Length: 289
Image 1: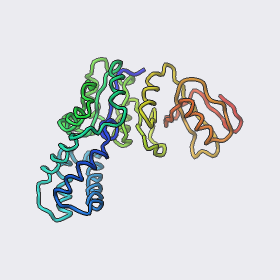
Image 2: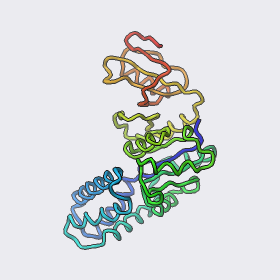
Image 3: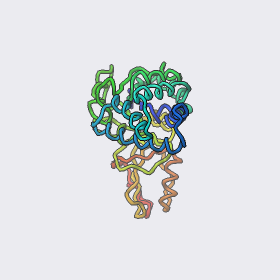
Image 4: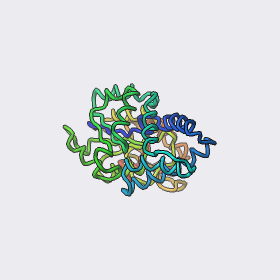
């Protein structure tokens, strides 16, 4: 079904919160910034605002990485070189293996069958160092990095260089990432199928996403599907109809909508927000159309 897999890096292949905590705590200690929670909250607010601006195309990623620590120093009335601090912060992200559990083995298996690429809003040298430290670099066939391309996800121009990959067919390429606003929205604009990595099981989004997974066992399962079907569940208790995608027999229909959703998951079907269906199940009447 798919031939090319494009992975985001932060919070998708690598546990960015863990790496960020490690790097920031060391940096704040050296700067004698305390209390830590207050400083981190200030940094997080600054960083999030800058990333939001970058996704709107208002600021480049290199300018963002220079500006965020400059603003942090100003917030605490400290002198210093914000760009130098950012370089130190990013270097420390590669001082330990912050890969998500199971990712290395997964990529090793998938690399035997698929072209594997990363698609990240980051700095190429930083991401390469972090992926190397995590032992993931041998399984990466191509890289698409915002500071090299010149634009960031979700800008469709970020995705256009992917078309130069050997054997690339947009319909047979899958974007996998944790961000709805950059990974999923960018792939939607480009016309590429998309898989939202949602390990915290956040509420279903309103944006159209082909697959929603909470772990990578689910990713490997969907990649093995030969003839998946899409199923629509209808019940008045749903704020909106629920959609699923999967392969195999449908579970026994029950009237309780929440129990039926659980049964769909137990049967191996994944949530999707694409409003299309091969089968429609009316839970009140137990009818399948």
